Every structure is written in structure tokens, then in C-alpha cells.
Length: 422
Image 1 (cartoon, one colour):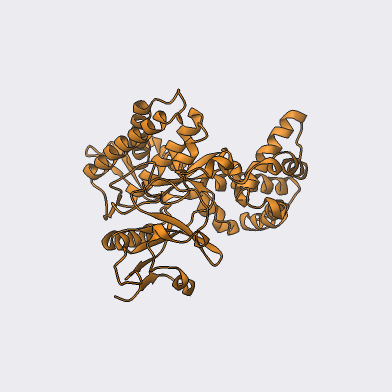
Image 2 (image 1 turned 45 degrees about the horizontal axis):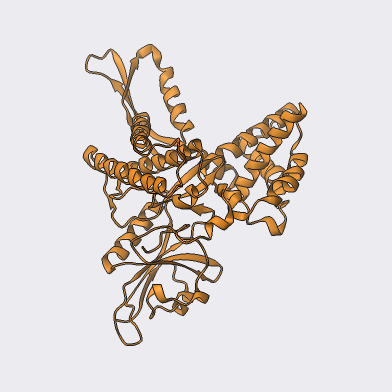
């Protein structure tokens, strides 16, 4: 069988890679020295042009299925790694068949859970990671995706304005349905419970888990948080006819969680005495979409919330000066007068420290701390100058993202991708 590359779009440079060699034997000069997580498959990172990809060897059926699932999930706006292509028809120089590979785009500024816990995360930080995992599972279930192997190992985490955002990495056991049954969701959660419990026990055995984190209780807490979020997003609510304000309150709660409401089903109960409200929730991203609509910036949800707060304060300052700019016009001025000059001030040799939106968020946080210490508003220019000199300059690249030493990430078995063979 001739070499077959399924990709959208196809990069001709892919043909230059040594597809006739098993992935485990690829020469070092072809690879990128990024840390890897755990996986049942052989995985390597490779640079093609200006992009870095994760390359995973898998069976023909698994590679094709996972490629299609990842593409569809990305189309639906679910946070996953981006599938690039599948390469089939691989053979050695002697004609021996080699398994196909799945290529995904490397998710910059992300790490798997083992690399995160290598820094002995505090319990509150570990809780934020688990919250991110819960939100990811809920989003997948709302999209009709049955994971089949929900775990920390199959997830990547990125910094998101003090919290974390989770991304699905491994979809080979997944299935897409128009809607999941309660039984499918329950089975996924049961699998998640067992997997997270086992992963935390493994960390505990390796001395990487804070003593305050109890594996069994923590893994059970994941289920409780899921049920709470799922109920908030999907539960039917009944209220009296003179309590219609609760419709708006429900929508505001959903928006504060980052979810949009596509439509509301509002009717009366059997007796006709109470109104019944059931929202139809779409995927998370309320603040992300609002910021993108106003400014074109494509950032994480919490980052978007933080930037929107600053934009709203900026617009309020314009009003105080007698300017009645529309929201769109104020956003245009904020982008050109505040955001872009701030991120453009990052010296070239420091640009790999943080994503621009995360950098802007941290400068805003630094401004708040300086203002608290001074007893008055320190101002953005002063906060920016002080942050560059006293904080960002002294941060290793990965520490700026996740709070762990860059040296720890270079150790074998630590990861930033779809995994590493065992």
C-alpha cells in the first residue's frame, strides 16, 4: 500500500518525515525535546516548519476513529487537542508494515497532570485542576460525547487567569451520540472515579501528593462537583408566577459559570399553578465569545472574564469623562490603547514566558497588589514596568505557566502531550 496522508489541509512538508522508520526509532534530530506523559502508545514530538506536532502510533482503526472524533469535537467547540492528520500505508525499507500514526497539534503552554503534581501542588491548586476536569467532562457530555476512559492522564491543563482549563487529549475510546443517557453518563463518571483514584494513589506512592490530599475522598469529590454543575446546567426549576425574576437569576448564574443559554422552555406544571423553567444550555464560552465578538481576541474563558472586566472599567472611565462610546467602539479603543500597548511591551527574549492574555491578567493582578500597598491606584504603566522588572524577568518559561521549575519538566516521564509509551 502506498503512503496515504489524510489531513486538512495537507502540509507537503509531512512527506519529509521518516515514515518508513518505527516511531520509537526516529532520529533525535527530527524530534523536539518536550516532556511527555504516560500512554500505552509510542508518542514523539516533531517540528514541521514552524509548528510542533505530537505523533502517536496506533492501530489503523484507532488512528482513524480518533482523528474523526477529535475533528468533530473541535468543530463543536469542545476543548480538545487539534487533530492534524492520519498517516497510513507505512512500511519499512524491507516492506514490513508499520502502524499508522495520528498527528495532533502541540497545545502550547499546557502540561499533563504528572508534570503539574511534580511540584507538589497545594491542595487548593489541585482542587482547581479537578474543577477544570469536571467542567471538561460536563462540556463533553453536553455535546453528546461518551469518553469511555475519563482520567487525568487523558487530559492537558493550561493556565487560565488563576484557574486552569482542561483539554481532552485521548479520544480513542470515545463515542459521539445525539444525547447521552443517564446510564452512559454514570458509567463515564464511574470510570473517572476509578481512574482518578488510581492516579492519585500513584502520585502518593511517588511522594508527589500533598499529605492533605486524600485520594479516595478527592476522587469522590470529583463526582460530587460534576453532579452539582450538571444540575445547575440542566435541572428543571419551578417557581410562582410572581417570581419571574428567577428566570433572569438562573440565566445570570449560568453565564457566571461560563455557559450560554440557547433557549428557554417555560411552561406551567400539571396544576397550572407554577411556572416550569428548563434551560437548553450550550457549551461553555459565554465570556470568551463576548470578548471575541468585541475585540477578536481568542483566549481562555477566565482570561476573557478578566479582560472584559478591565474593558468594562475602561468604558466606565470614558463615560466619567463625558464620552458616550458604544460597547463596540469602547472595545476598539481599549484594544488599541490599553491591551495591545501592554502586551507589546514584553521584551522579545521574554515572550515565551506567558500567553499575551495571561500576561495582561498578571499585570492587572500586579497593579492591584501595588495599589493595595500604596493606598492608591498605582496605574497600569507603573504596574507594567514593575512587573517586567521584578516578576517576569525572573520566571523560567514553564514556571511562568504552571509554577514548577523548568528543570523538573525535563525529567523522563513528565509530559506535555498525548503521552509516552510505558
